[in-house]
Image 1 (cartoon, one colour):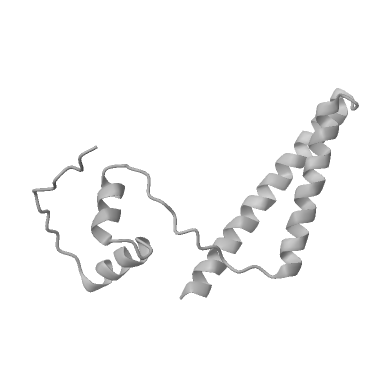
Image 2 (cartoon, helix red, strand yellow; image 1 turned 30 degrees about the vertical axis):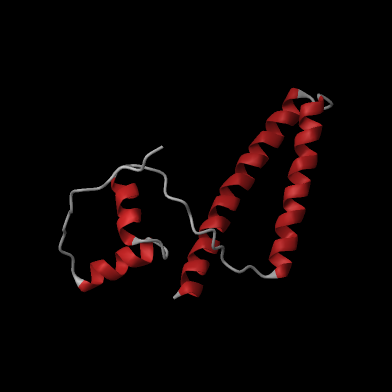
Length: 115
């Protein structure tokens, strides 16, 4: 496939603060490429940089994941009554809410670690 030649130049004015924020958001990629993708609704590859987590927290999260997998296998095996399954689903929904909250805290911590 022949790459498209870009012939038009687009110039915008931004403040120093806005420029710094744009550079931060593009995560080290070329700003023009990142802005083109964002503005045109194309997927933007993430940098893959994850916040550093303490090993004990990682072990706990792995244990939670293992327990959830075991629970899912039991639920899907048909060994539990429908009432038991309803209780398990309610508990899983509560766990999901807590994990979302934890994910947000980890992301915020990662953002603080980067600055």
